[in-house]
Amino acid sequence: MSYREGAKRYFAKQKALIPAGDFTKAARLRSMLIADSSRGALRNQESGRVDRGRLANLVAGDPRVFKRKHPRQDTNTFVQICVDASGSMDTDLTTRSLIVLDSVFRGTQIKHEILAWSGGSGFRLSQLRSPSDPPSKDWTIGAYAIAHGGGTPTAGALPMCASRLIEQRDCRKVMIFVSDGDPNFDQEVPECRKIVTEVLPKCGVEVFGISIGKESKLKRIIPVCGHAKTFDDFTDVLLDTAKRALL
Image (tube, rainbow, N blue to C red):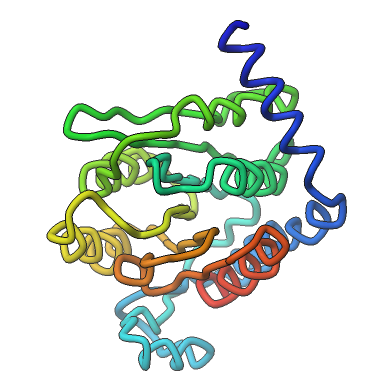
């Protein structure tokens, strides 16, 4: 069986297991992005006017409780979905999560890409979805099963993903980080957290994380994150987390 045929079959199998209502519900994430950007304010900033709706985040140690005036953006947004493909991730549940996330932006004016990584020092990013891919090419998400396995070089992958996102000009930038938050070495955690809480906000990137499966340590790296223990919970956890991060 060819790489293409294997990815297509796996994608179709996993998509068939997703309730139709999950796709409808997840579409609210797109509405959040459009509604928020149309207010003409850039939120989740470390300076500016106090954003009263985010003051509660100070308790969790998140200093991004300010907002600044920003030109109206509407759908001029780039969303980057970064996914951990290490051996500790549940292949089926993560693939279904990616299918749902992809459906939110596929065929809309909001550009998005899906990047996966795993392995050791010689890892490389795998682009499962490109902004230029047509909606009919969504089967490429099935290649996650092929990329899956090995270690979790988060400290290397996160800056690489971020640099690609920062290169996007004149648009709102949102990173959705899908991981269990367990990098190859615990020493990587402070470095990764600094990138998420200090470097990316200064570059105008909004970040939130989501994990799915039995355990999650993602909050060590990303303050605004959610954990779905089963796929049945995924869409609700996604929307709740996105609301805390974006609105």
